[in-house]
Length: 73
Image (cartoon, rainbow, N blue to C red; front, side):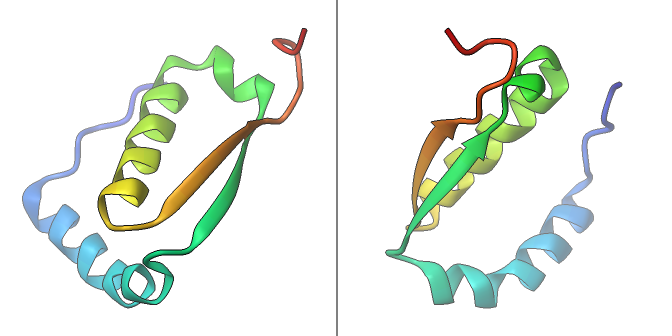
């Protein structure tokens, strides 16, 4: 599955909608489960990584834990 890259207008709209949440949760720590099944999809891996980087860039503190699945060992 390939995901089209969003244009600048879409990105601006999403960030505008997210801004109240970004402000509310800045400085908070979040535990994010990254399931083993998601590791098999290159598009999901890239999207997940970008989301974690964005969380950190806006002042949140993401902690990623492995959810198990086929890659646990």
